[in-house]
Length: 383
Image (cartoon, rainbow, N blue to C red; front, side):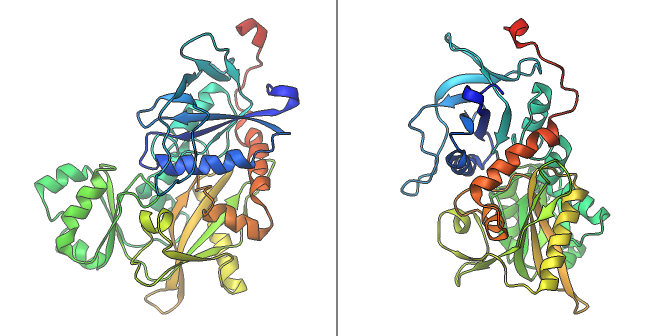
């Protein structure tokens, strides 16, 4: 251990270049607050919107204050060294010493964080880290390939169409979808950036005249856009954790999201800025329904080769044949850890409190990512 007095030195990395920068900051604030100072030496590491790594200024508040979202704007510039014999942070200016790390908790949402990019850097750096590896992170972040892998595993999917280079395609053909595709999808549809989260860039289209603008909004976040048919049903979520030794995953009790009257769908504002939804934690499901959701969540987790944790989102409704149908909507490999986030709330009612959840994830990180091709390190020789 490199921390003080035998403590585990944990870098909590947050912010980042994605549209989910502020949500990542809020999640990190909750994780940092949960770290027991008697067991951990916490190292907050912020990434600015333009990609600079910093040890943030002490006054940074990682919460929403008077409706203003937090943002990483300054601090001491550092970089994560890719040499596995170093395993830590190097100051980019001044005479500050390097900071050795034991484990990294990358509380990053969206592009350049949840999509396999930082996971690749951490693999090269020889550092154990919380969460899924490069492949699972990338596949789960891209809604197109999430759907393909889940379908291959026999998990039900809603109707959808993928638009590549959506901005260019939109300029060439404002309609984009032919009559057959529109008939297959029906209305309403949800137009989404393929690689984003927190409902950023998503539009609900109830008239095809709204479609070109919705595609433009999504394409401003990601050039690949996915158009999904609305799936009638209850919105159900379920958390999954890998065992502490990196072994068999287990599922939490599911939760349900119910929108208050006057709210059309669960968009960014409804999630974070308005009291627009009610949450049943746990969900009011039968034992058979609960078991089906938990089993499907673990199947989705394994199909995408996830590790550490994930939140699997479903629609529970009735299919065209009148039978109950469970449809996987998305898989989130780094779900929110904000005070209102469903992942920690689901595990709390399952019997795992927030601090215990963080402890579990940190304890599992070396088993999940810590053993592959890690050379023995003579730190004195590298000094």
